[in-house]
Image (cartoon, rainbow, N blue to C red; front, side):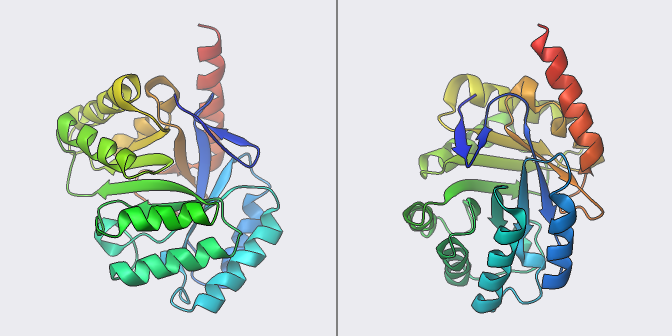
Length: 256
């Protein structure tokens, strides 16, 4: 797998890195959750800002990010506003979405930002460039809740996101059958073997796709998302249990 370094964390090396989303509505709840999460065996935290009830107030977003950074110390922070179209809590027009991302980047508190690659393709390259100007790495993402596209289509999306200049690419799809899960895993493996220039993150959502969240080290998915109390997507596994499984898989792979 390709690798990138975020603070002291190398993504794309060894076991998939474990990320837990914060999906609370108020600053008080967000900070309390972060305080609890920093004691757990996780690698990075995602702030799902679309859940934040004051997300449209730049000052409140900035203030919350400064408090999160102070609390989490050196733990990497991924900032994400997931639009309703891709499974999030609310919708934003592309211009407002870009402005919100810029606000988060300019705080200097975040390390990674999730940019929905196909929200508005005319905006995506400039949003990625803006993040890089602010020393923030980019995960270009696409979330398909309608089903699991053919392998050729998923490879095409991953390659398109890579060519946009992102530092990582992420694809989440919804399985309807076990074979859909296998298609996603096959896509992940082929992407890594033949096309990847950056770390790849993939998942098959819902309980049917939960295997994809634990076997990334076999197929080449660099990050997996677990939950504590509240999940941000269907099929997420409790973070403590997921950490144990990932470590068991990693130890066994080290024996081969």
